[in-house]
Structures are given as structure tokens and as C-alpha cells.
Amino acid sequence: MKSIFTYLSKRMPALALGGTLILAGTALAFSEKPAAKSEPKPTPVNLALDERPVSRDAAGRVSFAPVIKKVGPGVVRVFVTVKAQKTGFSEGSEMPDMLRRFFGDQPQGRMPRRGPGAPRHEGVGSGVIATKDGYILTNNHVVEGADEVKVALQDGREFTAKVIGRDPKSDVAVIKIDAKDLPAVPMADSDKVEVGDEVLALGNPFGIGQTVTTGIVSAKGRGNMGLDYEDFIQTDAAINPGNSGGALVDADGRLVGINTAILSHSGGNQGIGFAIPVNLARDVMGSLIKDGHVTRGYMGVMIQDLTPALAKEFKLKDNTGALIGDVTPKGPAEKAGLKSGDLLVEFNGKKVTDSRHLKLEVARTQPGQTVPVKILREGTAKTIEVTVKTLPGTEEVAKAEKDGNDTGTLNGVGVADLDKNVRQQFEVPETIKGAVVTEVKPDSAAAEAGLKPGDIILEINRKPVKNAEEAVRLTENPSDKTTLLRVWREGGSRFVVVDESKAG
Image (cartoon, rainbow, N blue to C red):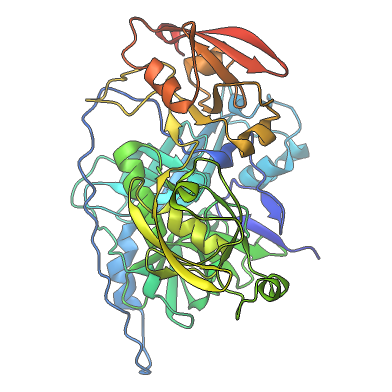
């Protein structure tokens, strides 16, 4: 029987091992933040951290009850409602497999009906209270596309939650409820977790209510699951659909990971579960709360793992490190002096084990920071200083709000520079200059006007656009809410008028 990798929210499809995530459109490519409203800017998040190493003595434990009493109140149920029209399937139409897995089997495979009017689809996941004032960590795939999110606490209270931000690239999302003095779960340093450590998984499997299972850390640093940024903790603690967004805690009751997926023949637990390390989750959380999207570092290199054959050709002693295959012209790496054929063995003082590990470390680096990079070039070790820049594609045309008000037009549109990879992806000729649209939020005026990811913005209000930075500048402090765009699409240019005064 074929193995499958399955997200644990009850509304997510499975995907073939080694394949790609079965998600609508290009959801994996971009971060998302809901439309802005007039409200105060959030205060800095105050996390409870306890980064001491876990106790690893050999003494047996009689019961985990004291740990569960401490942690259990901080793990919540997340209820998601999605209107049927968002799926594109009407009442009485055939329900695709991916929705059947979410909503359960209906008579003749038809869409479920929830009372009069348009049907509503409901899903159940889990979440972890990260701060006493109501910030909750969960998975992106739990709340993606939701019209309404509700949270139920262990004490019986229910709240309507606001989605603060989502990051499909790491499958992390942050939601917020209006409450005080909540039982936040303390966070450990997940880098200190070791294979063999005892862990507990808490969540809401199959929507039956909070459930606790126990196991060990089976492996660290797992990847190749279909996300852009992966560093999964693997565990044999029993986790099942509905556990998505739940807590993986150590024997001291500290959060070490966010339960996300399972590897299974049947879709149920078979002892191979995956959790996002809390260090990665809290980095993403901080960016989502502060900026509404995740800003990642960028070095401008095409890298690959070092195979035994490559190690032999490059006269290297072992197979660790990341080999540079190409360097992006005018990128940070080229400016620093890195070349094709260099082997990166250390980044900012940390040993580089493979290309995935390097990608994670670069992404976590603050743009503008200068870091030491140790390389091997023709057998000689060198240390080069590289100033990390912002990853292309994370620029937003409408910049972050000030005092809750938009400062520009084209809100909900993301843009990136036209580099070699983007040109190849969207089949853009070298003669075309401008900024590529990477994201258009479904409820935005730009989407209503017909702007699409892959469009190349050539002009904004009849002024030429050379790159993403210029596109951002040309949308700042507009005289009105109407924007005239000239875009290139499918071999030709056309004009698009985006009128944000009529958005929605």
C-alpha cells in the first residue's frame, strides 16, 4: 500500500510521499495577513521561555499527571467555518476527495448542508496559547481560507478568534482572542531536544476533545515534506487528524513543537508524526505579529547537497556542507565574493550539514545583518563576510499600516524582482522589465480588477516600473484610491484599473 503524508487538520487532503502539497492555487508560496482595520498596533509579544536542558536521568516516572495539569489548559480546540461558495462547488454538486476528507462522507458524496441558504463547512484543529493576552499558535492549514475561527478553552469558555497572520512556507499561523491571564504554555529551546527524549502530544484528535499521548523523539531535522522551510521533529507519540496545531511538550511540560503531520498508510496514527520546532514557530510568530508577514534573509546562491561523487571530484573529506552551483548576479553572495564551486561549511558560526539546513539558517537571519561564512575553495578554507538581504517576494506593494490605516494602494498585492528564476517560472522574456506579482489576496480590489500572480507590472499610473522597490514607492501616499496599471501577461500588455474605494 502506498504511504501518504497527511496534515492533521480534519479538513486537509493527503499527499503522495515525495510529491507536492494538494492545495488550491499557489498558497504555499506566500505569507498572508487579513485586511487591515482601524485598530491599535499590537504590542510586542511576551513569551514565557524556559530554555534549560530537559532532565535526562534514568529514574522512572510513575505518572505524567502533574505535567498535564500544568500544560493541558494551554492547549485549545480551534473550530473553523468556511462558506461553500469559496470552494467553487454548489449545493448538490459532487464533493472532491480533498473536501470529503475534511467534512466526512455525505450521502452520495454530496456537499453537506448546514441549515437554510448557502452550506457551511466546518473543521476542527488545535492550538497552543503562547501568551497570557491571547496570542495562539496553530498551523496555517488549520485556518487557511476560514471565514470564521472560534477557540474553545479547557475551562469551557469560547471566543471568536482573529487571524493575525499566516505563513504557508512553514505552515505556521497566529490567531488572537480577546482575553487576559490565559494559561500560556512555556517554551523550551527546541535546538536542545535530543533523539530519545520523552515527549507528550496534546490536541483534539477527530474532534473528540483534548487527548494526551506519549512517546519519544524519534528523529530531528526531517524534511522533504513539501514545505519551503522544514526542520521537523519526528515522534512516535500517537497523533491523528485534528491534532494539527496542538502541542508537543517535553517531560517538564515545556513546548518543543507544534504537531503538524503524520506519515501513514491509512490516514491515522502509525507512529510517525511530525512537529514544527518551537524555535522556528516562535520566529515566524514574532514576524507575523509585528509585520503581518514573514521577512526572511536572502543570500543569492543556488545550493545543493554534497554527494559522495561530488565530494570525490572536489577532493573533500566528507559529505557535509552545501555546494554552491550558481550565484545570483548582483546578489549578496556575489558582492561578498562567493563563487560557483565553493562549499559552505559554516554560516554565522553554525556548522552547515546540508543545503536545507543552510536555507533555514539564512532565512532566519535578519536582513541587513552581516555574518561570517566559512567556505572551502579548492581545498583551502576561507571566511567571507556576507550582508544578508531581504528574500525577494516578501516585499508588499502596500506597506505595513501606520496606526491601523493603509498608507498606499494595491493593498493585498505582493511583488518581487524579475530575477532569472522568476523569469523561468513565469516564462517572461528578457526584454520585459518590471515587477512580478507574487500574490493577490482574494478579497482585495486588485483581485476584483483581475490582477493575477505572474502578471508583470510595467507601469503604475503611467510611470515605468523597473523593480519591486519602485513598485512599492509608486503606490505610497496616493492622491486617490484608483490605480492605473499596465501589465504584461501571456505575451502581451494590457491595462488594469484597481479602484480600492469600491473594494468588496
